[in-house]
Image (tube, rainbow over the protein chains, first blue to last red):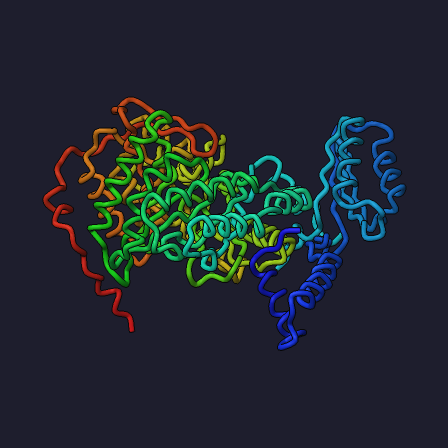
Length: 143
Length: 453
């Protein structure tokens, strides 16, 4: 285990505080190895944190209309335990557009995984699907 | 539905069709605690510190890109101006440190690391003199390190000795990197009134008033503004200004959100949004095209400066409304090589160095990415820098010169770097002599404006 200077300094201070006058090579070794073990356990790695503030995403899909487009998207979403909060769909001539607000906070899958699955569906159905976090719409269009 | 159909489609159009992206998320790191009497320990400390804060920078930025569907073109790092913590080093030692910086940048996966810098408007310390001497060697022996030197400020005046040193450094850098079209000069900026929180490389550095570590974001989006102006059609100028403001407002909000998200992932403070419109050589991502859409026939036509001034002002007003953390340069950039419409205007003979100089008086930065003949004397380059510094100092704004005296090239040639740096036709420079003026050396005293108290 490699320690940087800051950590070494901390270790020294701990040893001085604990032992003071009593310090001997053996005691110092004992205190240091105990502290180093403790440090190993609570390694301050950066914890994965969610960048979802609302837990909602906006899904936009469009392309040539064909049967099963909506079904393939919604069934995939329901498999992932995503909750569709709002949906608006229009068909103009042979084109369809669909915008959905989806709550993914209860989904076992994270944003990126859902995005990957949706891009698979987009490939199969030959349509475009965009997934974006709701925050971006809120910050751009609401004051 | 809480959002209108049009609002959602507009956002998709911006990100998918109009090249709206975030130009850079720049991680500023203080190196002030990395000094040691022993140079090899200093080098190790610098390397470790950059790795400690920067190792996840690219990953975090990519996560945020995916979450918002908006791409972040560049992930970069800025550091404390190197001459400040390492004032005791000699020129050769600075070069050794530059190589360490290059290695650290490569290790964390960023394309540029900026802050090989000195701040000398009022005079030099020994270390600053050594650093400036070392610049050509540092830039020619590294790939990712960028350098900048602040030679003038409204408060202190213009340091002509520093300008002369920088003109020599630019010439030498061009020579040492002649095999790659003098690319070293594309990584070297001479500033007046440099800002401490600029996220845009090559001129970025982590100023001395900045915290330990900070994340700044630079937005982009000329393509979005261009489309909005085209859509607006034939409206008068006040209405056109409104159109630009509305667009910039949205871009700034998105930029701040993304910058804050990256900072949150790092667990570090968010600094500023720089609302500069920054072009890229990509089709439609051009400031020159915006000016043309506003109505001038080509960049350089009479009216260009006024159009640019209006654009720049609208950008600032909208940005200030959209965010409380506006900083950096925050204007419009007019680099030649990085903007296809500007390149075309130079090639057609419509845009000259003098017109560009006038344009820099009303927008951010200055003579940026301009290639000139390789045999241009250093005193002429010093004259150009002095002119640009004067514009900055008198108008209390940042100006900069990033000029490339391309070694062995003449009018009619071009330098081509590919990628974001683009290509630049060699521009004509007047062959009149400036030596009698710049050769006097010394300082141009601080202007009236410096006495504001």
